[in-house]
Amino acid sequence: YASVEEAVAGLKKVQIQQFVHDGEALKGHYAIQDANGDSAILEFIDGQWEVYHGKQYDVLTNSPEYHQHLKSWEEQKPKSQSVISGSFTLPGNVASEQRFIWNKYMLEQLEEPTSYLNGLAKINSSTYHVPLDAANREIDGVMTGYATQYSLAYNLDQKIMHVRYQFGDVYTQYAVDF
Image (cartoon, rainbow, N blue to C red):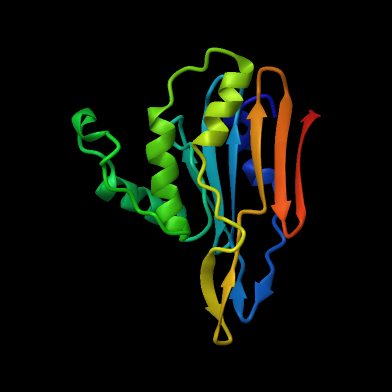
C-alpha cells in the first residue's frame, strides 16, 4: 500500500491465522507508518481488528492491549511542559506498560533531526531496550529474563530499515533497502 490510509482500508482483505496456546488465542499488534508521517497501530483481538489511526499513535510495546497503554499514558504523562525535566518521575522497570510510558515520554521530547545520522541516533537513544540479564518474570519458580532481542528503525524517505539484533553472544546491526 502507498499510505497508511490505504493499508487501513485494505485490512478487510487481510486474513489472520490465529494460534491458540494453553487455551488462549494469541493476539498480535502491528505499527505502520508512511513517509507523510501518518501512522496506525493495529491489533487483532477476538477475531476483530482494532485500529488506532493518527500521528499520535507512534509507540508500541507488548501487552496489554493498546487501549490500556493509552489510558496509562493519559494518567501518567506530564500535565504541562514546565514539569518536563530530569526529575520528572518515570516508570523504570522492564514491564511493557512501563516501557510504553518511558518511550512515549522520550519520543515526545525529540526535536527535528539535523541529518539522517542524527535522526537515527535520536530514535535509537530514545527507545527503552530491556537489558539481556534483567529479571522479567518467574517461570516454574525461576526468575527469567526476556530481553529486547531486536529493534527496527525505518527511514521512510530513503526506504532503508535499520535492524539491531542482540541475544546471548550475538550482537549485530545492519541496514536493508526496501
